[in-house]
Image (cartoon, rainbow, N blue to C red; front, side):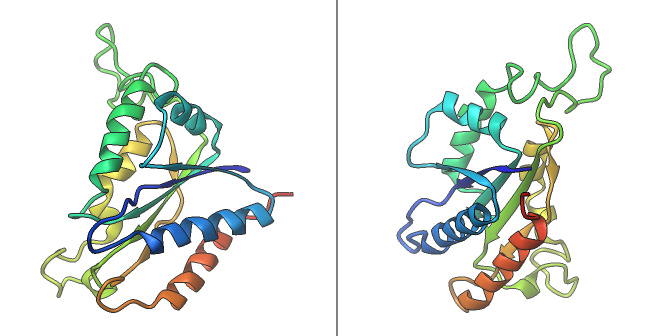
Length: 197
């Protein structure tokens, strides 16, 4: 586990220039490089489909750094998935959904060709931490961020990948605690990525 692809899905918005997500990407890259990992980057502003498929094949771990926009990933990453992941269904990322017309009974979602690879989702929220995993908070009805981001987890599972523990920064617009977020993020990366050696 030494090759890491970091995907930054944030693009500037009128109310958010993307500095926090960009800084987290830089922190992860610097931390991992000093501990022996090789890093590649992807962004939504400029990518080439074939190169992105190659990066996914090369990576042992993918870090998805993303703001939470309307309870999911930004539209630019949805476009990226539609283009890159659809092209990779030719066997490079997955062999379709794993079923064939001759064998439609095979389990759906079993066609992934990236088995043994891992992914980590890192989120930045306007929502406060108290809004999650709390039955007294009515909006998320006691659900956590992994439940909210279940479709994103399923996208990676479709390729046969396994999750590392999700990270989240909360309340980043109305009540930010950036220094603590940075410390927690560093600790999280250190915990999930042992030194290469």
